[in-house]
Length: 96
Image (tube, rainbow, N blue to C red; front, side, top):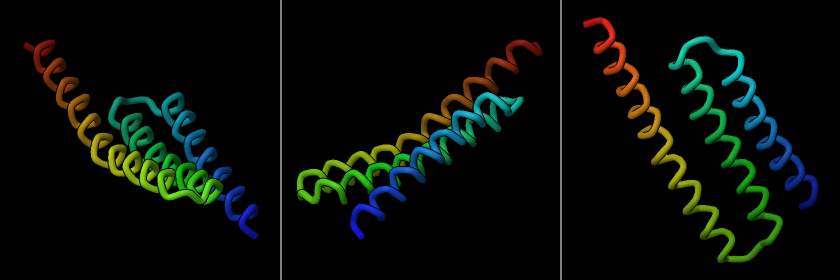
């Protein structure tokens, strides 16, 4: 039973990361690409790390996975905001 749950989590996580990669290629503008990157990749990494944590069943692995997830969920929106702001500033400079 444990192997099935681990397999589902890892496959679902890899699928979300793959969807994010396809979104980067398929979407036209910067904002859509950032949305695909931050949302799908963050959730994909959450699923992957959950699967890895269940696989190893050690406290240190749970702690490290939790810290990585917190770090990703805190920094991904900040990075996307910084990229969007610099893109907007660049567009304003070009229009002047």
